[in-house]
Image 1 (spheres, rainbow, N blue to C red):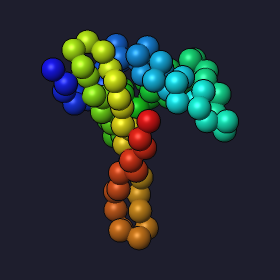
Image 2 (cartoon, rainbow, N blue to C red; image 1 turned 90 degrees about the vertical axis):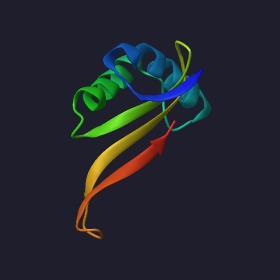
Image 3 (tube, helix red, strand yellow; image 1 turned 180 degrees about the horizontal axis):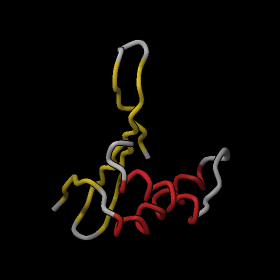
Length: 85
């Protein structure tokens, strides 16, 4: 059964695998598990920065979406930047 949930620190290894697959297809980025783990941990452990939503199929993560928060001068307040990976 598939479910969308908020990522937890224990998900970081599977999230790094997804990012590695993505970065292998993008010439602008290089897989670096240490950097990706650090970035993911900073988002997951600091909900005021953003959120990572994962799509689970049983115990496997098959997709993720990053939402990072910023202040918009156009909107005059907090906005979420949606980054699909």
